[in-house]
Image 1 (tube, rainbow, N blue to C red):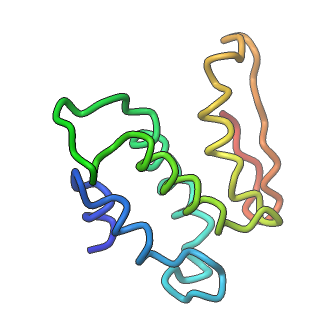
Image 2: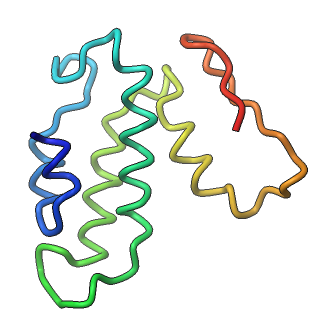
Length: 113
């Protein structure tokens, strides 16, 4: 239900404030966390980069949406490399196509992007 709200136009900020991704929050089971967080950050990156949706709405203001996403991402655990996929998506346009990046996620194994 919370993922559906994240994808619904105009409900992102409210959904993110209710969605507790902190490790003590208990919303995400620890055994699923390593696979779920990269998927969630890809969804949020897509919402983060959308310029404008056409209509002017206070609930779907791009600046407020980006601030809500960054605030939400601040709850991720840097010790588990949970920021890696979001940072990679941000810098990907600057990486030459012939360069293979390998991100060390020792808690789950290496992922090549």
